[in-house]
Length: 167
Length: 167
DNA sequence: GTTCTTGCAAACGCTTTGCACCAGT
DNA sequence: ACTGGTGCAAAGCGTTTGCAAGAAC
Image 1 (cartoon, rainbow over the protein chains, first blue to last red):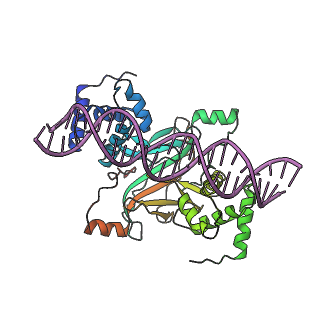
Image 2 (cartoon, chains in turn red, brown, purple, yellow; image 1 turned 90 degrees about the vertical axis):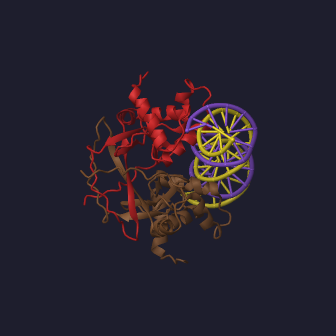
Image 3 (cartoon, rainbow over the protein chains, first blue to last red; image 1 turned 120 degrees about the vertical axis):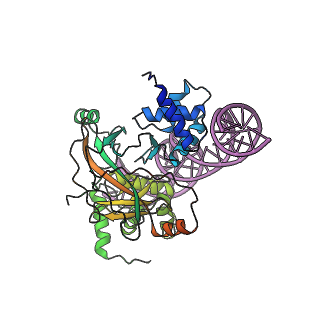
């Protein structure tokens, strides 16, 4: 999918980097652009692979360094993995995640689909809240079909007890 | 803290293992017991270290294998880490987690403190929900004190955008 | 007796780091 | 000119795996 990017988009990326106090370099622009367009929550390796063709000199270490720098300054989020490598999310608007326990694919869930009550500022014992992460464990359509047809390969952990309760 | 364990507890552990289709062995009983008593969400390494004194022949690989077997059969939960090693939770009743982004400590949050509306069975695109994980990002009392006094060491990622929205 | 588990060591995957060179400011 | 980023290779950490000996069934 060859996305032609409007000029204003690139301009805003430059400004984003500058505002974060980061120098404007090829790798950073490329990675930032990819993160903003890729809704698949890529791993560092996937970012690397997808940029290597256009950017042959790019190194994996630079991808890691850059993603770490971005996460530290709020240009992207780390998505805590239930297993396997860390994944990165360039979508900064509030949203939840849905992880397919069959194939490992990670989906975005808009807050319109499931609204959370505002979290308390304090949880007791002096725990002050500054963020919330909600992840659904799901089975995606294709994995449901596979489970119904082929049968279980027994890879995944036992279905977790939901964290919720009908209160 | 030398917990003397009532006989019925050990008996129920044996039954738990048997019901899960696992053989009753020393390492498994010890690890299961530790998980049920430790509310600190230990890593595999911590489990290993805490059992090694009483169980000198225990190996780290066995701890990993056992924890994996437990998680697969629902005897414990894996807690997805925002960074660092995987952590394990023997508390199976529904509850949330609160991760201190300063020191990495992980706290349990009872559902009485923050109730979640029941999750939809379907999220759209054929995603069928079978679990939910909610994690608060918090600053614990001691890390708040440290931040107020000492100042930021700049270790952690930028405070994440909360996933919620006042809906 | 058969099957599963253990413990050791080695391999593995993911991520970070040290360092010399180069580019952005 | 100075500071910080890049790319490479190597090290690091956390976890899994192959295998022989032993324990549970």
